[in-house]
Image (cartoon, rainbow, N blue to C red; front, side, top):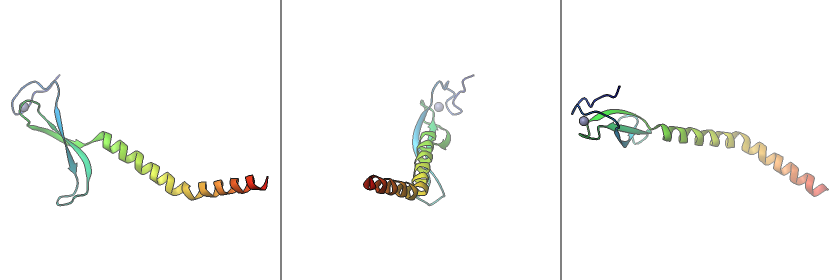
Amino acid sequence: MTPNCPNCDKLLTNVGYQPTRIGPLLSTEGYKGIIYVCPYCQHVLGVGFDPLALNADTASNAAHEVERQLGPMLSEIVDGLNQLLHKV
Ligand SMILES: [Zn+2]
């Protein structure tokens, strides 16, 4: 079942979107969001987080955390290997 726009009643076989930010009021911080709009009359159909931006942010945060936690250990391993190579 395909819904109709609650404003203009046209069949919504697709919807448009506009980027926005979702966060605390009066703050510039927040997350990337999407405003879903009727392609015919621009009526706002809903608002949600941008799933692609959330995935990218989550992957980036995970990579930074892995680097933060394993970075010093990896440096020690590389230093140890360099010392071994220079002894041979
Ligand atoms: Zn509409």
